[in-house]
Image (cartoon, rainbow over all chains, first blue to last red; front, side, top):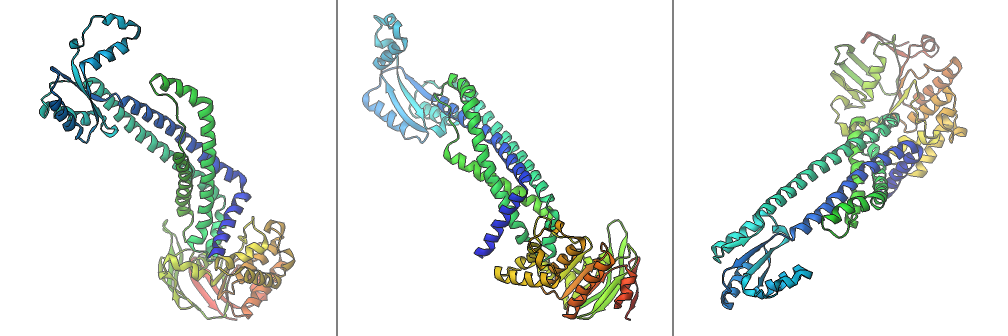
Amino acid sequence: MFERWLLMFSRALRNMRQSPLLCGAAIGTVGVSLTIVAFFGILVLNVQKLTGHWSREVQVVAYLDQVPKPEVLHRWQSGIASLQQVQEVRYVSREDALARFRTRLGQDAALLTGVEAEVLPASLEVSLRPDFRNRAGVEVVVSYLRQQAGLKDLRYGQDWLDRFDAFLGLMRAGGFICGGFLLFATLFIVANTIKLTLFARREELEVMALVGATSWFIKAPFLLEAALQGALGGLFSLGCTYLLFAGFLRQGLGSLLLAAGIDSITFLPTSYQLALIALGVLLGVSGSLVSLRRLVRV
Amino acid sequence: MIQLFNVCKAYKKGSSALNEITLNIPKGDFVYVTGPSGAGKSTLLKLLYVGEKPSRGQILINGQNITRMGLGKIPRLRRQIGVVFQDFKLIASRTIFENVAFPLEVQGKKRFEVSKKVFQTLKLVGLEHKLHRYPLELSGGEQQRAAIARALVVDPLVLLADEPTGNLDPDLTLEVMELFKGANARGTTILFATHDRSMIRRFPRRQIVLEGGFLVEDRTP
Protein backbone atom coordinates (compact mmCIF):
# COMPACT_ATOMS: atom_id res chain seq x y z
CA MET A 1 0.00 0.00 0.00
CA PHE A 2 2.81 2.39 1.00
CA GLU A 3 4.66 1.55 -2.23
CA ARG A 4 1.48 2.33 -4.20
CA TRP A 5 1.12 5.73 -2.52
CA LEU A 6 4.78 6.44 -3.15
CA LEU A 7 4.26 5.57 -6.82
CA MET A 8 1.26 7.93 -7.04
CA PHE A 9 3.18 10.72 -5.35
CA SER A 10 6.23 10.31 -7.57
CA ARG A 11 3.96 10.30 -10.64
CA ALA A 12 2.33 13.52 -9.45
CA LEU A 13 5.71 15.22 -8.90
CA ARG A 14 6.96 13.93 -12.21
CA ASN A 15 3.90 15.28 -14.04
CA MET A 16 4.56 18.69 -12.48
CA ARG A 17 8.22 18.59 -13.51
CA GLN A 18 7.39 17.52 -17.03
CA SER A 19 5.02 20.38 -17.79
CA PRO A 20 6.34 23.32 -15.79
CA LEU A 21 4.43 25.83 -17.88
CA LEU A 22 1.03 24.22 -17.35
CA CYS A 23 1.84 23.58 -13.72
CA GLY A 24 2.88 27.23 -13.28
CA ALA A 25 -0.34 28.36 -14.97
CA ALA A 26 -2.44 26.27 -12.57
CA ILE A 27 -0.53 27.54 -9.50
CA GLY A 28 -0.74 31.11 -10.81
CA THR A 29 -4.48 30.86 -11.42
CA VAL A 30 -5.15 29.49 -7.95
CA GLY A 31 -2.79 32.10 -6.50
CA VAL A 32 -4.31 35.11 -8.25
CA SER A 33 -7.88 33.92 -7.59
CA LEU A 34 -7.18 33.33 -3.91
CA THR A 35 -5.42 36.70 -3.63
CA ILE A 36 -8.69 38.35 -4.64
CA VAL A 37 -10.56 36.21 -2.10
CA ALA A 38 -7.98 37.06 0.62
CA PHE A 39 -8.11 40.74 -0.28
CA PHE A 40 -11.87 40.63 0.13
CA GLY A 41 -11.38 38.71 3.40
CA ILE A 42 -9.17 41.47 4.82
CA LEU A 43 -11.79 44.07 3.89
CA VAL A 44 -14.59 42.07 5.52
CA LEU A 45 -12.48 41.36 8.60
CA ASN A 46 -11.66 45.02 9.15
CA VAL A 47 -15.16 46.26 8.44
CA GLN A 48 -16.41 43.67 10.94
CA LYS A 49 -13.93 45.06 13.42
CA LEU A 50 -15.26 48.53 12.70
CA THR A 51 -18.90 47.50 13.17
CA GLY A 52 -17.89 45.70 16.37
CA HIS A 53 -16.33 48.96 17.52
CA TRP A 54 -19.45 50.93 16.59
CA SER A 55 -21.72 48.41 18.25
CA ARG A 56 -20.16 49.25 21.61
CA GLU A 57 -22.27 52.40 21.35
CA VAL A 58 -25.43 50.32 21.38
CA GLN A 59 -26.82 50.74 24.89
CA VAL A 60 -30.06 51.68 26.61
CA VAL A 61 -30.13 54.63 29.03
CA ALA A 62 -33.04 55.01 31.46
CA TYR A 63 -33.30 58.49 32.98
CA LEU A 64 -34.79 58.55 36.47
CA ASP A 65 -37.18 61.30 37.62
CA GLN A 66 -36.25 60.79 41.27
CA VAL A 67 -33.21 59.34 42.93
CA PRO A 68 -34.41 55.83 43.88
CA LYS A 69 -34.07 54.33 47.31
CA PRO A 70 -31.07 51.93 47.53
CA GLU A 71 -33.26 48.81 47.83
CA VAL A 72 -35.33 49.81 44.77
CA LEU A 73 -32.16 50.56 42.82
CA HIS A 74 -30.72 47.19 43.82
CA ARG A 75 -33.93 45.41 42.73
CA TRP A 76 -33.87 47.15 39.35
CA GLN A 77 -30.18 46.44 38.79
CA SER A 78 -30.37 42.75 39.63
CA GLY A 79 -33.58 42.34 37.58
CA ILE A 80 -32.07 43.99 34.52
CA ALA A 81 -28.74 42.17 34.90
CA SER A 82 -30.57 38.84 34.91
CA LEU A 83 -31.57 39.34 31.26
CA GLN A 84 -29.39 37.27 28.92
CA GLN A 85 -29.00 40.24 26.57
CA VAL A 86 -27.44 42.43 29.25
CA GLN A 87 -23.72 42.68 29.79
CA GLU A 88 -23.61 45.38 32.47
CA VAL A 89 -25.96 47.71 34.36
CA ARG A 90 -24.38 50.87 35.66
CA TYR A 91 -26.07 53.44 37.93
CA VAL A 92 -24.96 56.99 37.16
CA SER A 93 -25.87 59.30 40.05
CA ARG A 94 -26.52 63.00 39.54
CA GLU A 95 -23.03 63.74 40.93
CA ASP A 96 -21.42 61.26 38.54
CA ALA A 97 -23.36 62.78 35.64
CA LEU A 98 -22.14 66.26 36.53
CA ALA A 99 -18.52 65.05 36.88
CA ARG A 100 -18.77 63.34 33.50
CA PHE A 101 -20.25 66.45 31.94
CA ARG A 102 -17.45 68.50 33.39
CA THR A 103 -14.82 66.13 31.98
CA ARG A 104 -16.42 66.29 28.55
CA LEU A 105 -16.43 70.05 28.53
CA GLY A 106 -12.69 70.00 29.18
CA GLN A 107 -11.30 73.53 29.06
CA ASP A 108 -14.86 74.93 29.08
CA ALA A 109 -15.67 73.26 32.40
CA ALA A 110 -15.73 76.71 33.97
CA LEU A 111 -19.14 77.16 32.33
CA LEU A 112 -20.52 74.82 34.97
CA THR A 113 -19.49 77.02 37.85
CA GLY A 114 -22.43 77.36 40.18
CA VAL A 115 -24.36 74.53 38.56
CA GLU A 116 -25.67 72.00 41.09
CA ALA A 117 -25.86 68.26 40.47
CA GLU A 118 -29.67 68.43 40.96
CA VAL A 119 -30.14 69.87 37.45
CA LEU A 120 -29.05 66.57 35.91
CA PRO A 121 -31.07 63.35 36.19
CA ALA A 122 -29.63 60.15 37.61
CA SER A 123 -29.68 57.26 35.12
CA LEU A 124 -29.22 53.57 34.58
CA GLU A 125 -26.90 52.69 31.67
CA VAL A 126 -27.53 49.21 30.30
CA SER A 127 -24.89 47.84 27.94
CA LEU A 128 -25.60 44.73 25.85
CA ARG A 129 -23.61 41.60 25.14
CA PRO A 130 -21.95 41.71 21.65
CA ASP A 131 -24.37 39.17 20.11
CA PHE A 132 -27.38 41.27 21.14
CA ARG A 133 -26.16 44.68 20.03
CA ASN A 134 -28.96 45.06 17.50
CA ARG A 135 -32.57 46.20 17.31
CA ALA A 136 -34.01 42.91 18.58
CA GLY A 137 -31.70 42.86 21.63
CA VAL A 138 -32.43 46.47 22.45
CA GLU A 139 -36.19 45.89 22.17
CA VAL A 140 -36.11 43.09 24.77
CA VAL A 141 -34.26 45.33 27.24
CA VAL A 142 -36.48 48.34 26.54
CA SER A 143 -39.65 46.34 27.00
CA TYR A 144 -38.34 44.95 30.30
CA LEU A 145 -37.43 48.41 31.54
CA ARG A 146 -40.86 49.78 30.60
CA GLN A 147 -43.01 46.93 31.84
CA GLN A 148 -41.12 45.42 34.77
CA ALA A 149 -39.26 48.42 36.17
CA GLY A 150 -41.81 51.08 35.21
CA LEU A 151 -39.18 53.34 33.68
CA LYS A 152 -40.52 55.70 31.05
CA ASP A 153 -37.74 58.00 29.89
CA LEU A 154 -35.60 55.71 27.78
CA ARG A 155 -32.99 56.63 25.16
CA TYR A 156 -31.38 54.11 22.86
CA GLY A 157 -30.65 55.98 19.64
CA GLN A 158 -33.63 54.57 17.72
CA ASP A 159 -32.76 56.12 14.35
CA TRP A 160 -29.07 55.28 14.65
CA LEU A 161 -29.92 51.71 15.61
CA ASP A 162 -32.10 51.29 12.53
CA ARG A 163 -29.33 52.58 10.28
CA PHE A 164 -26.76 50.40 12.03
CA ASP A 165 -28.96 47.31 11.60
CA ALA A 166 -29.51 48.12 7.93
CA PHE A 167 -25.77 48.64 7.43
CA LEU A 168 -24.94 45.31 9.11
CA GLY A 169 -27.57 43.53 6.99
CA LEU A 170 -26.15 45.08 3.84
CA MET A 171 -22.62 44.09 4.84
CA ARG A 172 -23.67 40.51 5.51
CA ALA A 173 -25.67 40.15 2.29
CA GLY A 174 -22.90 41.86 0.30
CA GLY A 175 -20.30 39.62 1.93
CA PHE A 176 -22.21 36.44 1.14
CA ILE A 177 -22.99 37.44 -2.45
CA CYS A 178 -19.51 38.77 -3.28
CA GLY A 179 -17.75 35.97 -1.40
CA GLY A 180 -19.93 33.29 -3.01
CA PHE A 181 -19.49 34.80 -6.44
CA LEU A 182 -15.73 35.08 -5.98
CA LEU A 183 -15.43 31.47 -4.83
CA PHE A 184 -17.60 30.22 -7.69
CA ALA A 185 -15.62 32.24 -10.23
CA THR A 186 -12.38 30.94 -8.70
CA LEU A 187 -13.59 27.34 -8.90
CA PHE A 188 -14.63 27.87 -12.52
CA ILE A 189 -11.28 29.39 -13.53
CA VAL A 190 -9.24 26.79 -11.63
CA ALA A 191 -11.31 23.90 -13.01
CA ASN A 192 -10.79 25.18 -16.55
CA THR A 193 -7.05 25.67 -16.11
CA ILE A 194 -6.72 22.15 -14.73
CA LYS A 195 -8.88 20.90 -17.57
CA LEU A 196 -6.34 22.36 -19.99
CA THR A 197 -3.49 20.58 -18.22
CA LEU A 198 -5.45 17.31 -18.32
CA PHE A 199 -6.42 17.82 -21.93
CA ALA A 200 -2.73 18.07 -22.79
CA ARG A 201 -2.34 14.60 -21.27
CA ARG A 202 -5.48 13.01 -22.69
CA GLU A 203 -3.42 10.42 -24.60
CA GLU A 204 -1.79 9.31 -21.40
CA LEU A 205 -5.21 9.03 -19.77
CA GLU A 206 -6.45 6.98 -22.72
CA VAL A 207 -3.47 4.60 -22.56
CA MET A 208 -3.91 4.20 -18.81
CA ALA A 209 -7.50 3.13 -19.29
CA LEU A 210 -6.54 0.78 -22.14
CA VAL A 211 -4.01 -1.17 -20.09
CA GLY A 212 -6.54 -1.74 -17.33
CA ALA A 213 -5.91 1.07 -14.87
CA THR A 214 -8.79 1.57 -12.47
CA SER A 215 -10.49 4.92 -12.24
CA TRP A 216 -8.77 5.53 -8.88
CA PHE A 217 -5.31 4.61 -10.26
CA ILE A 218 -5.74 7.11 -13.10
CA LYS A 219 -7.19 9.90 -11.02
CA ALA A 220 -5.12 9.73 -7.83
CA PRO A 221 -1.86 11.22 -9.21
CA PHE A 222 -3.80 14.01 -10.92
CA LEU A 223 -5.72 14.76 -7.73
CA LEU A 224 -2.48 14.75 -5.72
CA GLU A 225 -0.93 17.04 -8.30
CA ALA A 226 -3.92 19.38 -8.14
CA ALA A 227 -3.78 19.37 -4.32
CA LEU A 228 -0.08 20.29 -4.41
CA GLN A 229 -0.74 22.99 -6.99
CA GLY A 230 -3.61 24.28 -4.85
CA ALA A 231 -1.43 24.42 -1.74
CA LEU A 232 1.36 26.19 -3.63
CA GLY A 233 -1.22 28.56 -5.13
CA GLY A 234 -2.51 29.24 -1.59
CA LEU A 235 1.01 30.05 -0.37
CA PHE A 236 1.61 32.24 -3.42
CA SER A 237 -1.65 34.09 -2.74
CA LEU A 238 -0.65 34.63 0.91
CA GLY A 239 2.61 36.21 -0.23
CA CYS A 240 0.82 38.42 -2.78
CA THR A 241 -1.83 39.42 -0.25
CA TYR A 242 0.79 40.39 2.31
CA LEU A 243 2.64 42.50 -0.25
CA LEU A 244 -0.64 44.19 -1.22
CA PHE A 245 -1.50 44.66 2.44
CA ALA A 246 1.88 46.17 3.33
CA GLY A 247 2.17 48.29 0.23
CA PHE A 248 -1.34 49.51 -0.31
CA LEU A 249 -4.07 48.33 2.05
CA ARG A 250 -2.42 49.32 5.32
CA GLN A 251 -2.33 52.95 4.21
CA GLY A 252 -5.32 53.13 1.86
CA LEU A 253 -7.84 51.20 3.91
CA GLY A 254 -6.11 52.33 7.08
CA SER A 255 -6.75 56.02 6.60
CA LEU A 256 -10.39 55.25 5.75
CA LEU A 257 -11.08 52.98 8.71
CA LEU A 258 -8.94 54.86 11.22
CA ALA A 259 -11.04 57.94 10.51
CA ALA A 260 -14.11 55.82 11.28
CA GLY A 261 -12.78 54.96 14.71
CA ILE A 262 -10.68 51.77 14.81
CA ASP A 263 -7.11 51.88 15.97
CA SER A 264 -5.29 49.54 13.58
CA ILE A 265 -5.82 47.50 10.38
CA THR A 266 -5.61 43.75 10.80
CA PHE A 267 -3.97 41.24 8.42
CA LEU A 268 -5.49 37.76 8.11
CA PRO A 269 -4.99 35.83 11.38
CA THR A 270 -3.11 32.49 11.29
CA SER A 271 -6.30 30.44 11.21
CA TYR A 272 -7.48 32.37 8.13
CA GLN A 273 -4.08 31.95 6.47
CA LEU A 274 -4.26 28.18 6.99
CA ALA A 275 -7.86 28.23 5.74
CA LEU A 276 -6.68 30.03 2.59
CA ILE A 277 -4.12 27.28 1.86
CA ALA A 278 -6.76 24.62 2.61
CA LEU A 279 -9.12 26.46 0.25
CA GLY A 280 -6.42 26.30 -2.43
CA VAL A 281 -6.14 22.53 -1.93
CA LEU A 282 -9.92 22.18 -2.01
CA LEU A 283 -10.21 24.27 -5.17
CA GLY A 284 -7.45 22.30 -6.88
CA VAL A 285 -8.93 18.92 -5.97
CA SER A 286 -12.52 19.84 -6.82
CA GLY A 287 -11.47 21.54 -10.07
CA SER A 288 -9.47 18.47 -11.00
CA LEU A 289 -12.32 16.12 -10.05
CA VAL A 290 -14.76 18.02 -12.27
CA SER A 291 -12.41 17.79 -15.25
CA LEU A 292 -11.37 14.18 -14.59
CA ARG A 293 -15.00 13.10 -14.50
CA ARG A 294 -15.36 14.30 -18.06
CA LEU A 295 -12.07 12.94 -19.37
CA VAL A 296 -11.77 9.62 -17.53
CA ARG A 297 -14.59 7.24 -18.24
CA VAL A 298 -13.46 3.91 -16.86
CA MET B 1 -12.30 -17.66 -26.15
CA ILE B 2 -14.29 -14.96 -27.99
CA GLN B 3 -17.97 -15.34 -28.86
CA LEU B 4 -20.23 -12.78 -30.47
CA PHE B 5 -23.99 -13.28 -30.82
CA ASN B 6 -25.96 -11.00 -33.17
CA VAL B 7 -23.85 -8.00 -32.29
CA CYS B 8 -24.94 -4.65 -33.71
CA LYS B 9 -23.40 -1.24 -33.23
CA ALA B 10 -25.26 1.87 -34.30
CA TYR B 11 -24.33 5.48 -33.61
CA LYS B 12 -26.64 8.29 -32.62
CA LYS B 13 -26.55 9.87 -36.06
CA GLY B 14 -28.27 6.73 -37.37
CA SER B 15 -25.31 5.15 -39.14
CA SER B 16 -24.72 1.54 -38.23
CA ALA B 17 -21.12 0.33 -37.95
CA LEU B 18 -21.80 -3.38 -37.35
CA ASN B 19 -24.82 -5.53 -38.14
CA GLU B 20 -25.76 -8.95 -36.74
CA ILE B 21 -22.21 -10.22 -36.23
CA THR B 22 -22.06 -13.77 -34.90
CA LEU B 23 -18.61 -15.27 -34.40
CA ASN B 24 -16.76 -17.90 -32.44
CA ILE B 25 -13.01 -17.62 -32.04
CA PRO B 26 -11.42 -20.54 -30.13
CA LYS B 27 -8.54 -20.16 -27.70
CA GLY B 28 -5.16 -19.84 -29.41
CA ASP B 29 -6.61 -18.89 -32.80
CA PHE B 30 -5.01 -16.31 -35.11
CA VAL B 31 -7.70 -14.47 -37.05
CA TYR B 32 -7.40 -11.68 -39.60
CA VAL B 33 -10.23 -9.15 -39.64
CA THR B 34 -10.20 -7.70 -43.11
CA GLY B 35 -12.30 -5.47 -45.30
CA PRO B 36 -12.15 -2.03 -46.90
CA SER B 37 -11.90 1.19 -44.87
CA GLY B 38 -15.13 1.83 -42.98
CA ALA B 39 -16.10 -1.85 -43.00
CA GLY B 40 -16.25 -1.97 -39.18
CA LYS B 41 -12.89 -3.60 -38.34
CA SER B 42 -11.85 -1.03 -35.74
CA THR B 43 -15.37 -0.92 -34.28
CA LEU B 44 -15.29 -4.69 -33.80
CA LEU B 45 -12.00 -4.48 -31.91
CA LYS B 46 -13.27 -1.52 -29.87
CA LEU B 47 -16.25 -3.58 -28.74
CA LEU B 48 -13.88 -6.37 -27.66
CA TYR B 49 -11.76 -4.14 -25.40
CA VAL B 50 -14.93 -2.39 -24.17
CA GLY B 51 -13.93 0.94 -25.67
CA GLU B 52 -17.59 1.01 -26.68
CA LYS B 53 -20.64 -1.08 -25.88
CA PRO B 54 -22.71 -2.80 -28.58
CA SER B 55 -26.17 -1.45 -29.31
CA ARG B 56 -27.51 -5.01 -29.37
CA GLY B 57 -26.26 -8.59 -28.98
CA GLN B 58 -23.91 -10.33 -26.56
CA ILE B 59 -20.13 -10.62 -26.42
CA LEU B 60 -18.36 -13.23 -24.31
CA ILE B 61 -14.63 -13.26 -23.65
CA ASN B 62 -13.24 -16.24 -21.77
CA GLY B 63 -16.79 -17.02 -20.64
CA GLN B 64 -17.48 -13.52 -19.28
CA ASN B 65 -20.35 -11.56 -20.80
CA ILE B 66 -18.67 -8.20 -21.32
CA THR B 67 -21.82 -6.46 -22.55
CA ARG B 68 -23.30 -6.74 -19.06
CA MET B 69 -20.08 -5.85 -17.29
CA GLY B 70 -20.20 -2.97 -14.80
CA LEU B 71 -17.73 -0.07 -15.13
CA GLY B 72 -15.77 -1.30 -12.12
CA LYS B 73 -15.00 -4.67 -13.70
CA ILE B 74 -13.77 -3.36 -17.05
CA PRO B 75 -10.16 -2.63 -15.90
CA ARG B 76 -9.77 -6.25 -14.73
CA LEU B 77 -10.91 -7.51 -18.15
CA ARG B 78 -8.56 -5.14 -19.98
CA ARG B 79 -5.62 -6.52 -18.03
CA GLN B 80 -6.19 -9.80 -19.88
CA ILE B 81 -6.33 -8.11 -23.28
CA GLY B 82 -3.41 -6.54 -25.11
CA VAL B 83 -4.15 -3.87 -27.70
CA VAL B 84 -1.84 -2.63 -30.46
CA PHE B 85 -2.71 0.36 -32.65
CA GLN B 86 -1.51 1.64 -35.99
CA ASP B 87 -0.37 4.89 -34.33
CA PHE B 88 1.36 3.01 -31.45
CA LYS B 89 -0.17 5.14 -28.66
CA LEU B 90 3.03 5.25 -26.63
CA ILE B 91 3.32 7.97 -23.98
CA ALA B 92 5.86 10.40 -25.44
CA SER B 93 7.03 11.74 -22.07
CA ARG B 94 8.04 8.29 -20.78
CA THR B 95 10.93 6.07 -21.71
CA ILE B 96 10.39 2.78 -23.52
CA PHE B 97 11.02 0.94 -20.25
CA GLU B 98 8.38 3.04 -18.46
CA ASN B 99 5.88 2.61 -21.28
CA VAL B 100 6.22 -1.15 -21.22
CA ALA B 101 6.26 -1.25 -17.40
CA PHE B 102 3.05 0.70 -17.16
CA PRO B 103 0.53 -2.19 -17.49
CA LEU B 104 2.41 -4.06 -14.74
CA GLU B 105 2.42 -0.99 -12.45
CA VAL B 106 -1.31 -0.75 -13.01
CA GLN B 107 -1.63 -4.33 -11.75
CA GLY B 108 0.34 -3.42 -8.63
CA LYS B 109 3.32 -5.72 -9.35
CA LYS B 110 6.43 -5.34 -7.20
CA ARG B 111 9.24 -3.22 -8.60
CA PHE B 112 11.75 -6.06 -9.07
CA GLU B 113 9.08 -8.18 -10.78
CA VAL B 114 8.29 -5.29 -13.13
CA SER B 115 11.95 -4.73 -14.05
CA LYS B 116 12.55 -8.41 -14.75
CA LYS B 117 9.43 -8.89 -16.87
CA VAL B 118 9.91 -5.64 -18.83
CA PHE B 119 13.49 -6.53 -19.65
CA GLN B 120 12.48 -10.02 -20.79
CA THR B 121 9.73 -8.63 -23.02
CA LEU B 122 11.91 -5.90 -24.52
CA LYS B 123 14.50 -8.58 -25.28
CA LEU B 124 11.80 -10.61 -27.00
CA VAL B 125 11.03 -7.70 -29.35
CA GLY B 126 14.71 -6.75 -29.74
CA LEU B 127 14.60 -3.43 -27.91
CA GLU B 128 16.52 -4.29 -24.74
CA HIS B 129 19.32 -1.91 -25.72
CA LYS B 130 16.91 1.03 -26.15
CA LEU B 131 14.99 0.81 -22.91
CA HIS B 132 16.01 4.29 -21.71
CA ARG B 133 15.15 6.03 -24.97
CA TYR B 134 11.96 8.03 -25.50
CA PRO B 135 9.44 6.88 -28.17
CA LEU B 136 10.10 9.80 -30.50
CA GLU B 137 13.80 8.91 -30.55
CA LEU B 138 12.94 5.54 -32.16
CA SER B 139 11.99 4.58 -35.72
CA GLY B 140 8.39 3.68 -36.59
CA GLY B 141 9.16 -0.05 -36.55
CA GLU B 142 10.85 0.22 -33.16
CA GLN B 143 7.94 2.18 -31.76
CA GLN B 144 5.55 -0.49 -32.96
CA ARG B 145 7.73 -3.19 -31.40
CA ALA B 146 7.64 -1.22 -28.12
CA ALA B 147 3.84 -1.03 -28.38
CA ILE B 148 3.68 -4.79 -28.95
CA ALA B 149 5.96 -5.30 -25.95
CA ARG B 150 3.57 -3.22 -23.84
CA ALA B 151 0.69 -5.43 -24.99
CA LEU B 152 2.60 -8.69 -24.41
CA VAL B 153 4.22 -7.84 -21.07
CA VAL B 154 1.12 -8.97 -19.14
CA ASP B 155 0.88 -12.32 -21.01
CA PRO B 156 -2.58 -11.48 -22.34
CA LEU B 157 -5.19 -14.08 -23.17
CA VAL B 158 -6.18 -12.06 -26.23
CA LEU B 159 -4.17 -9.68 -28.39
CA LEU B 160 -6.11 -7.20 -30.51
CA ALA B 161 -4.18 -5.43 -33.25
CA ASP B 162 -5.73 -2.60 -35.22
CA GLU B 163 -3.75 -2.20 -38.46
CA PRO B 164 -0.45 -2.55 -36.59
CA THR B 165 1.59 -2.68 -39.80
CA GLY B 166 -0.30 0.12 -41.55
CA ASN B 167 2.51 2.65 -41.01
CA LEU B 168 5.42 0.29 -41.62
CA ASP B 169 7.45 -0.63 -44.71
CA PRO B 170 7.45 -4.29 -45.94
CA ASP B 171 10.63 -5.32 -44.07
CA LEU B 172 9.41 -3.93 -40.77
CA THR B 173 6.00 -5.52 -41.42
CA LEU B 174 7.70 -8.92 -41.57
CA GLU B 175 9.52 -8.26 -38.27
CA VAL B 176 6.31 -7.26 -36.56
CA MET B 177 4.42 -10.25 -37.97
CA GLU B 178 7.04 -12.56 -36.50
CA LEU B 179 6.33 -11.10 -33.06
CA PHE B 180 2.60 -11.77 -33.44
CA LYS B 181 3.26 -15.30 -34.66
CA GLY B 182 5.53 -15.87 -31.64
CA ALA B 183 2.86 -14.64 -29.24
CA ASN B 184 0.28 -16.86 -30.94
CA ALA B 185 2.63 -19.84 -30.64
CA ARG B 186 2.78 -19.18 -26.87
CA GLY B 187 -1.01 -19.53 -26.71
CA THR B 188 -2.33 -15.98 -27.10
CA THR B 189 -5.49 -15.62 -29.18
CA ILE B 190 -4.93 -12.93 -31.81
CA LEU B 191 -7.34 -10.74 -33.78
CA PHE B 192 -5.42 -8.83 -36.40
CA ALA B 193 -7.27 -6.13 -38.33
CA THR B 194 -5.67 -5.33 -41.68
CA HIS B 195 -6.49 -4.65 -45.31
CA ASP B 196 -3.03 -5.72 -46.50
CA ARG B 197 -3.84 -8.65 -48.83
CA SER B 198 -0.20 -9.44 -49.59
CA MET B 199 0.49 -10.07 -45.92
CA ILE B 200 -2.50 -12.36 -45.62
CA ARG B 201 -1.25 -14.31 -48.63
CA ARG B 202 2.21 -14.56 -47.08
CA PHE B 203 0.97 -15.66 -43.65
CA PRO B 204 -2.34 -17.40 -44.38
CA ARG B 205 -4.67 -17.76 -41.41
CA ARG B 206 -8.42 -17.72 -40.73
CA GLN B 207 -10.00 -14.62 -42.25
CA ILE B 208 -13.13 -12.73 -41.25
CA VAL B 209 -14.20 -10.34 -43.97
CA LEU B 210 -16.38 -7.35 -43.10
CA GLU B 211 -18.13 -5.07 -45.56
CA GLY B 212 -20.41 -2.19 -44.66
CA GLY B 213 -20.69 -3.56 -41.13
CA PHE B 214 -21.77 -7.05 -42.25
CA LEU B 215 -19.78 -10.25 -41.88
CA VAL B 216 -19.59 -11.38 -45.49
CA GLU B 217 -17.06 -14.18 -45.26
CA ASP B 218 -15.39 -16.38 -42.66
CA ARG B 219 -12.83 -18.66 -44.27
CA THR B 220 -10.01 -20.83 -43.01
CA PRO B 221 -7.18 -21.69 -45.46
